[in-house]
Amino acid sequence: MADLLHVDGLDAAYGRIRALEGVSLRVPDGALVALIGANGAGKTTLLRTVSGVQPAAGGRVRFAGNDITRWSSQQRVKAGLAQVPEGRQVFGPLSIEDNLRLGGWLRTEAERTAGLERVWALFPVLAEKRALPAGTLSGGQQQMLAIGRALLSKPRLLLLDEPSMGLSPKLAAEVLATVRALRDDGISVLLVEQNAAAALALADHAYVLEAGRIVLEGPGAQLRADPQVQAAYLGL
Amino acid sequence: MLSEFLQFLFAGVTSGSIYALAALGFAIIFNASGVINFAQGEFIMLGGMVSVALAAAGLPLPFAVVASVLVSVVVGIGVEKGAIEPARRAETVTLIIITIGASILIQGLAQVIFGKGQHALQPFSGDTPILVGGASLLPQSLWVLGVSAIVVAALWGFFNRTLAGKAMLAVSYNRLGAQLVGIEPRRVWLVAFGLSGGLGAVAGALSAPITMTSYDAGLMLGLKGFVAATLGGLGNGLGAVVGGLLLGVAEAMTAGYVSSAYKDAVPFVLILLVLVFLPRGLLGARSADRV
Ligand SMILES: Nc1ncnc2c1ncn2[C@@H]1O[C@H](COP(=O)(O)OP(=O)(O)OP(=O)(O)O)[C@@H](O)[C@H]1O
Ligand SMILES: [Mg+2]
Image (cartoon, rainbow over all chains, first blue to last red; front, side, top):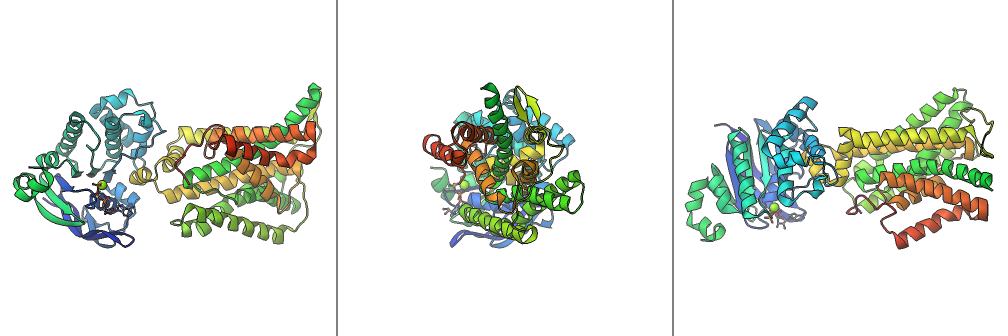
């Protein structure tokens, strides 16, 4: 399978603080790849750099055959990269439907309409509440909205930053089931999770990030059986 | 008695509409960028002075007014491109100081180009007063009220009924969220400055036949627009309109029933009261997480 995303030797920094050092990873077309790591490992920074809301200090990002390292975030969304950010970042005072439509800001009206139908089918609870301000939703519903908003941009690759954070175990499982369904639908996924057990169970391939460096990688099942991973991330 | 009250009310609502347009200019830029644009008053001045100059040069009045609005839109975009954008990563406070610099520059250029005199623009449709309930209303006041109402309605429609308007709001509600769906905050800032430039010029051209105008008219009008915006809750569109009208009427009533000597003190008293008792404005600021 060809690589849809290829991150190669990526560096990122906040002033003098180096957050990523020579990170390389691949997301094959159609795969669900997980990235796990402790607090402050640099997972969010990696997704921000891939989305283009934060500049890379070094290295390259290739997407669908193009070197997108210097592309604006807008160009990347247009090319099919969408991020569901940490903390959801929905537009609280705007209605749920408006939040979703804005997800399709770079698409045509017909594409937005089709996208809305898809999200209503995926998350019926959002359809019921479509006219309400996004800020009135519960945490789990806001997570659905954030995923829906990303879907409206017709992504080829979805970057998910801790989608189960702050959710009850039941809701978290639902959200992760949705993520798997999206992968089965043909959308490639790069999933960042602190819930390592769930993420590894789901992933075709996984990477472990520690203090800004990739320290381990392999098929999800293989990492789950790795004694180091079990001790550090699975609490076994 | 009643006629006297009506007379003051007409005056207040007329100047209040002007303040409301100025306040909306502040609100739009504040929402998009968190910046309080102290060059807003200069856009108002440009509306009046460019109209006066072009009309004096022989251009028919409607063309002169439209041209003044276009000039001000271009100046607004120029301020953003030339002064704000290069410093866009700087702190908000720095950007606000930059707008003060831009304001001084525009005013200086206006003084060189237009001179120091006071000018009156010719009223749009004569100056025969209309009698209403014993009070007289200038036709120009009707222009002010009518055009302001249309502008406010158009803005309301833009921000509530179009995806582009909502995209601008999205940047103010959540910058990161907006960037991640492909909205470019820089474009939004540019549109906000252009829009505010146009709004200011409309206010300036409408009021020039009533109040006279000069190269330095922007200072006081800008200040009053800022007070009106703060009164209503900075960043709140409806608040800007309410704040503007309230300020205009309060001024006119003070001038009528107390003394016109105190008229210009009204905005300062009101802003002190608001800052002390309602720090988020009458209708509450929309984006309390800003600044
Ligand atoms: N805005 C910032 N300014 C300075 N340092 C930052 C900033 N954001 C993150 N960092 C630092 O960069 C490093 C990586 O942070 P990042 O948020 O990418 O980690 P993370 O793996 O997503 O953590 P978490 O699991 O807590 O979300 C951390 O050391 C963090 O303190
Ligand atoms: Mg994070």
